[in-house]
Image 1 (tube, rainbow, N blue to C red):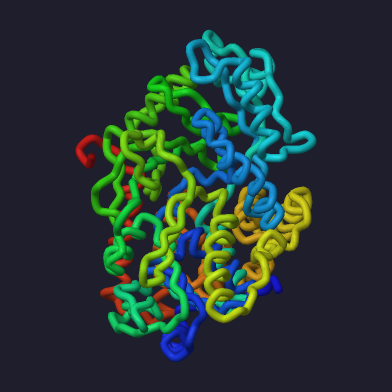
Image 2 (cartoon, rainbow, N blue to C red):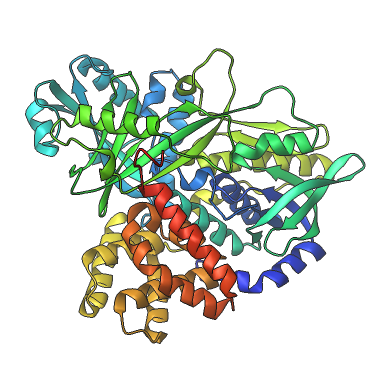
Length: 555
């Protein structure tokens, strides 16, 4: 069932009509990774599901994480063994579901004088980590001597380096993982719509029986009737609980995480490093194609959730941490190429700092039946979805006597897959490179296409062959855009440049060079008027400035 299904805002009116006129078993509020996972889990069990997102899919937390499917090694220090066991085990499952999108990434943990991890405790900790996460074969941890560590990463600080731990993690694109879950759920009948804000709830016999929705594209309102409603709105969960008059007891505690992007030439590490920060925290430096990104901060956040910015203190903190661990690098503010900042919707615990708060998920159920999912980690999204859909399944059984099947998502490949093992992904990248190299494209271009779209790359290249454009680079971007508009619900250029392709973060120069061609396509396909085109241009130029310009006068 892994096929391209039309999923386009060109048919937005028809989708809104279907949502308005049909009765659903379940409405899921929130198009991030949690909501996407819930939609797939519930629809694959036979429920009729509607998924609603007030902005673009993955536009909140789910496009702004560290982009790792990892086991949470640091949670061993908090004795959070259950969390480490679950997310550690989930890594292998999610990798199997989408090996083109969840890529093996060896992680180096330097052991330094006065650092957070000593050699003996690190060895024991990584061993426990392997056991809890059920790590097998060559992915099991190794303890390295100083010379071995420096051979793997020559930029490490020779004077204070004592050795390193070496273990396995996975890297992903969180926004694309979210989108492929949503697209896979379409195979099971899910109706999904972005730019559809839930403004209130419908009640029947004092129980939630649907939602009131504002289409933020047309400003029209409509109702969606449903037997059950799950809120997976991430940082906005408490707002919806307030609308439902059920915000009591536990509440969210939002923390901000900032990441900076540098050209790989400025931070030319060979592989991912999980390293000490002088204040006792830990940080990641991760090479990815043309760039290396670093993060993250972990600070309390109480401001506008729709406008999460990066201030001077954030940038200086990250740069100083990198320079401390890699003393020969000497990064400066002007070296920042791009950046992103996101919120973690954690569960508040009195007396605990941002870094000490648990990453566990919790389910809240109101007296009127609204189910809210809060907390959790990107890596654990599939199990989180399973747990909350199990809650719905229990209510269905209690009310109707009907039993839903158990979760199937551990065995449902995501859209774009079709690979049994990662080595097949590498083989496919080579095949695509052979196919496009004669057109002047590089190995990076082949890697980019396959690690974003997987087997869907073939569809993009078919579109490429139909387009009339002399510049091959522009032609390929237009092919991606056509694919995004027809099969990935792209509504505006920001959806495309930020969440469908990650270009704003990982290849910001391509955004600068492709603004005009992309706006031309929107003008032609959506019949967009010139005022809107100019508005989008202004937004894009502002986004580029916000994410890349860290001069003191701006901050």
